[in-house]
Image (cartoon, rainbow, N blue to C red; front, side, top):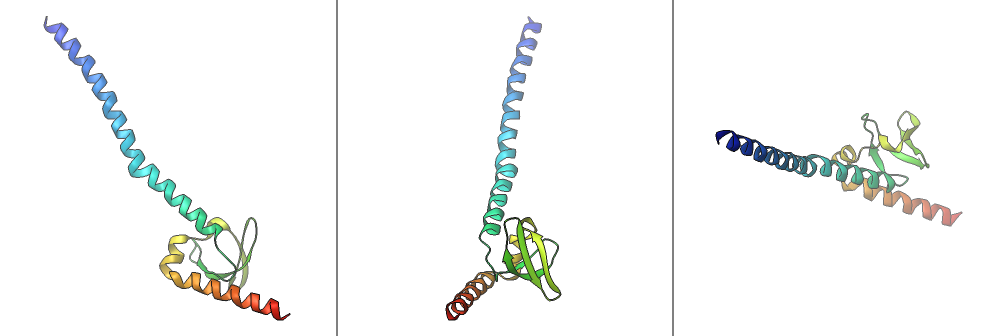
Length: 121
C-alpha cells in the first residue's frame, strides 16, 4: 500500500514540475524577452526618423551631425570631416542622454533653413 502512495506522489510531482517550468518560462518572457524586443523596436524607429542636421552620438562615442541619409547608413559630419556609418551605429540612449529634445529642435531648424535656401535659388 505504501508503494502505491509513493508512486502516486511521484506522478503528482512531475505535473507540478511541468507547471513550475511553464511559470518560469512565462516569467522569463515578461521580464527579459519582451522588454528587449520593445527596446529594439524603439531603437529601429528612432534610427528611421533621423533627419539631416540632427545631432547624434554613435555607439562608439563619436559626436556629430547627420550630413546625408542613405539607404544603408548615414554620413556623419564631425570636426575632423565626414564619415559614413551604418544606421545601427547611432545610439538612441546616448543621443537622448546627451542632447535630449535639443537634437530634435536643431534638426527642425536646419531643415527649415535648407528649405528657405532652396526657395531663394
